[in-house]
View (cartoon, rainbow, N blue to C red):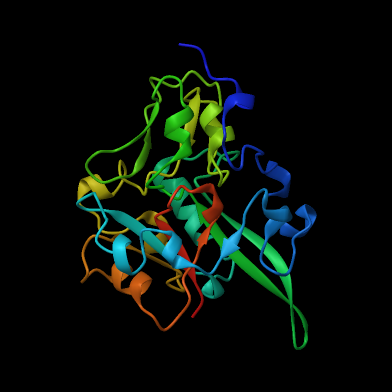
Length: 249
């Protein structure tokens, strides 16, 4: 099977974020309004109703049991990078690779400017573009828990999934000769009985709340569905319905 032509794909975010610019939003012409690079790379919106984690018709639509998700309390991040270190150690991520990262930008405040840090990772979308464009089905959505997985034995290194991902959440692992990405620590932790991902467990500021969105008594479900704070997702216009959410406070 041959890979589809990119000009025939209607993918948002085909433009990959260059590795050297991943941590510095200002190099991409970040607008203070919250739209990054004119909306072509990462766009933030405060409209949770455009995701499954919303009120009304979407509230009961968590098709997986468990249905894993994560809420990131963005303003708590201090860029200590313990999440990155724990992820790399737990999942054997090479020095040139990443499964999670921390982006940064300067925002104006009453005293001038303030540095803001934004943790990012695979969003484990309900409607992932990466699985749709992969010609060999090397990347797939696990039918048990909805985690977007990689089967390195099927990967041919065409990078179609990497270019189709709106979140720049993949890299090519030269040792495996295959694309690698976050799997919510399924192979290394969750499938072995651990409750949290390595990044969530390592964070000293409890930035990341991880759990089962399908259970209304789970901490991540309660945090996402509370009405006291605004909750948003990255790149909602891509239509992928992410399972990673953001808030402040």
